[in-house]
Image 1 (cartoon, helix red, strand yellow):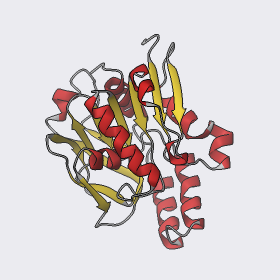
Image 2 (cartoon, one colour):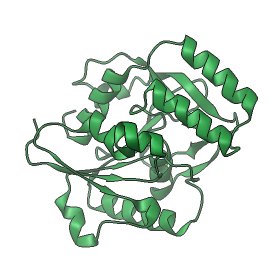
Image 3 (tube, rainbow, N blue to C red):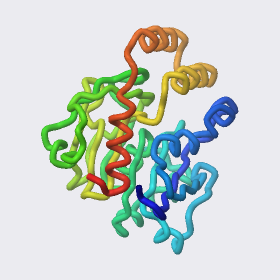
Amino acid sequence: MDAGKRFALLLCAEASEYVKKKYGGYFGVFVGMLAEEGETWDVFRVVANEFPEDHEIGNYDGFVITGSCNDAHGNDVWICKLLNLLKELDSAKKRVLGICFGHQILGRALGGKTGRSQTGWDIGLRTVHLSTSSSKFFSSLKIPTILSVIECHRDEVRELPQKAEVLAWSDKTGIEIFRYGDHILGIQGHPEYNADILLHLIDRLLQRKFIVENLANEVRGKFLASQEPDKEAWRELCIGFLKGKL
C-alpha cells in the first residue's frame, strides 16, 4: 500500500455520456485500474485546457496520460501546452505513464516521431510480445512474455526518442511499449479498456465517420469471438511502474 501518495490523470479526451454514467468517465476507468488504498487521484482535463500549475507539479508522485481522438502529431493549443508540460515532467524526473495517445505524445515530447500507421487502424485484441530486455525492467513481476491487450488507434510512434528503448512489439506495431530512463513508460494499447468500452467506442467511431461500417462489423465479429485481454497482468505492470515497485 502506498498511503499518502498522490497521482494526476491528464485527461486528453471527453468521455461519452454512456462511459460517464456507467464508469464515472475515463477518470473512473483509470482510477478503477490503478488506484490503491490511501492514495489521492486528481484529474486535469488538458483537452479542455486545464493544466496543473508549475508549483503543483511537485505535489504529485506520478502522472498518467490518457488516450484521445486527437492526433499526437497535431498542433492544437492544448497539445502544444501538453508537450511543454511533459518536457517539464521529464526534467523533474517525475514518473509518467502514457496510454495510446499518451504513449505517442510522450514519444513526440522526448524527440521521437509520431504519425499515421502505415498499416491503418488497429482495433480489437492484439498479441504483444515483450522484448528480452524488458525482463530486466519488469524483473519483479511474474508476468508472461506474451500478453493480449485491447487496441484502438490509427497513429503510432514511428521513431523512438534518443536513449529510449523498445520493451514490446506486435505484428501490427513495432513500438508497443517503450521506456525512457526509469521514469517514463509508453504503452500503445489500452490496458484500462474492457470489451464493453471498446464495442461502445467502435459505435462512436462509426457515427463520427472515423471508420467505415465494414471495418466496424469485422472488428465486432472478431472481438466477440476472441479471448479476454490479460487485464490483471497489465494492471500489475502499470502499477509496478507508476509506483516504483519494479
